[in-house]
Length: 229
Length: 233
Image 1: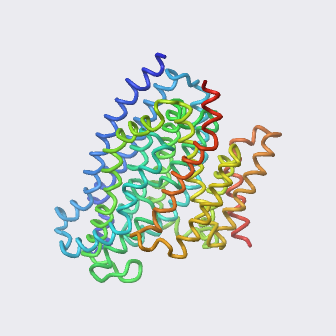
Image 2: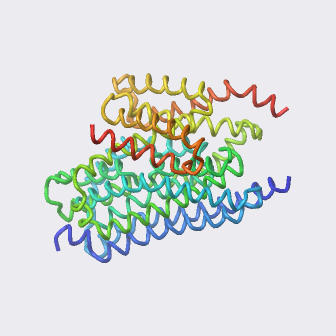
Image 3: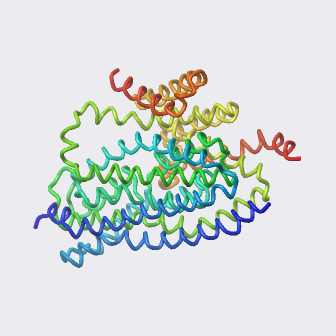
């Protein structure tokens, strides 16, 4: 068996499938619990179904970007690993770098040379060892961070709100600045996405039915314009 | 105040228990493909080469293992943290979905309602993402060859546009804060790209987000803290 046949073999599909099932199960459990808890903290059914709808709409664009990333990873490390890694822990950038480091250590340039079974093994181990730090730290620190945040805000709910909205502006500000600063086509796409979103927000004030499509329309239009230029 | 008791005393402790259990299972599951390679095909890594791989991967990513959960925690909350790091794709998908879910449900981040809505938003995005990837991996090569190159290259612009749009969505409510944060963030990234922080290992990967998140939190408290505490009183 060559490396690609091993990478795409049934035992690999099963091993990777178990991890994907775990991710889906976790999401399903947490969503179910959140739906049960919602009414007890004063959320209406309507608010919760609106949340489902808008999140579903927002997911589609990024999912397609991740899909195209998976298709390129699929060529280099096989279907099962690409599928598992992008459903589980990973991000496109991390996985291709980690896979490249792994195969490189035994002299195989990822995507250039033919994959050997040893190179595949090195890539798989590097992707795993390089990423479990995220799960271990976040799993064991989540409840501690909860306590720290409560202490920082002194149990003051207005302060909790300030921390969260500030963090959100910080996250998106950082993402925007990172893409705008190189002044390339990505920067143009970022700026256009921002302008079109502003336009859509104004338009949907007059046409409320459009509101939940604001984001989708703005980003798809910005993408098409930049691609055509 | 029975609501508060329910959230703090029943909901959260149960979520912590489930989150930790799944986190441990996730670590075990992560190794399954590597064990299959070893047990079924007799392929084990070369230990010294693996040590080198681990060190080079860790030198670029180890800071992120700690910095990302800390930076994203104030946005996604405790339950979101468990979900986000098992499923990955956090800044490009989980946070946008959690935030948009909060907007359309009309709840504020950092509140109990906000945290529950964010959990629903992230969970839905995970289910959709894994479904699309599963369909994609089955159709795999066929889809890849069917997509013209113009489309695959256009997709590169989708995420930048998404970040720009989201920044407007959330920044417009607080123009002063978002304006200052954006200007400072741009200055910071110019400095990072110019190599000013190269003496810190891996800084280009994590420094920007960390400084922006905690800088923005501090600024928001300074700019809007007084106003809010008056309202509270």
